Length: 182
Image 1 (cartoon, one colour):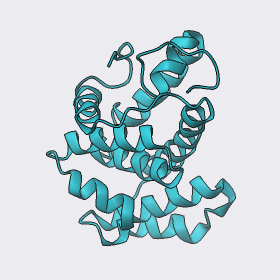
Image 2 (image 1 turned 90 degrees about the horizontal axis):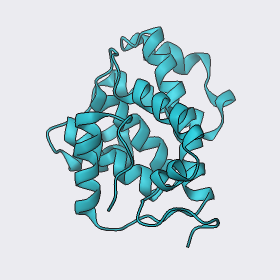
Image 3 (image 1 turned 45 degrees about the horizontal axis):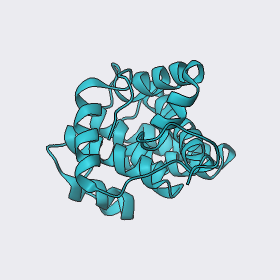
């Protein structure tokens, strides 16, 4: 049961967005730019970063919905998404993405945990300043989004088919679309 009176039938963050649309607009725009907008990291890679951070924050809604969006971008490879959440170092992803996920994990713990060596390692694997910037911002933003979802105790359905459909919608349309009724 949510801690405040949120609109019923809207899962996770969408209920908070519906409760206060004026704060939802910039939050949606930020997510859209970071995960769906133009960039040198693929949308699937960016969704994996969001999923990884959300799993480390134990936010069921965000790790499941963004994991489904990542899978939608990656040929429906839910196994890869699960592997990244469990141990990205063993996942079948690029060394550059592994280095960026290491940075994202440190940001999730606390921004000051990112060391010059972490950034140098990412650069050694070909990460650009923009990719490092966006990784840090995705990790920071998703730590906020995760705390928003869980801090309000939003309704988080358990049906994997619902999340798969949500992931397809997010992958196709991004984050500026209206809230999804379940």
